[in-house]
Length: 174
Image (cartoon, rainbow, N blue to C red; front, side, top):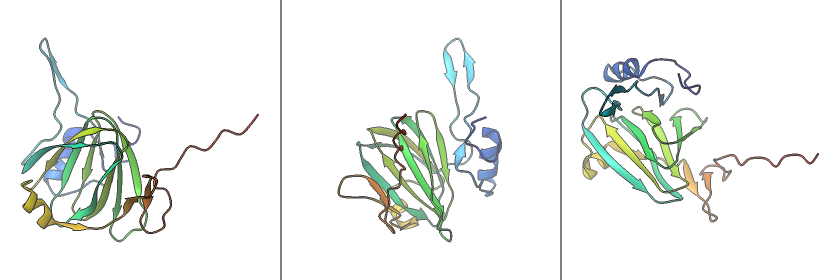
């Protein structure tokens, strides 16, 4: 199990809960156990009735999302690069963040404000419940600017201007 998981459950259990409309609190999804054969492997990244699959490519230092979906949900799978995923409940001021790398999967339930930051060129796979045409996607979302890039290109909280990604503290001199 991934040590970041707060609610340990298998990939199949997670997918079954989402398909039943019971959304797990923790957005990080445990990866499925791949099926191996002499030709290689097959690893599921989503199961169930799905409305859209999109490949999203982001340039280094790009900021995306900053919204919530009224009714849609989606999984995001990092195919290459790094994605910092910020999320919060609309009624809760606490923002959580996860750094995701190749193969990591994150889930966003309806009503969860989320933003994504890409410190390097990154490609993700977005798998949604609803159709992913641009117009349909835009009609279901509400913009909520939670994170922005400041004049240095650093992600900061829109409300306070504080850096959203904690920087490592210098080591004390010995």
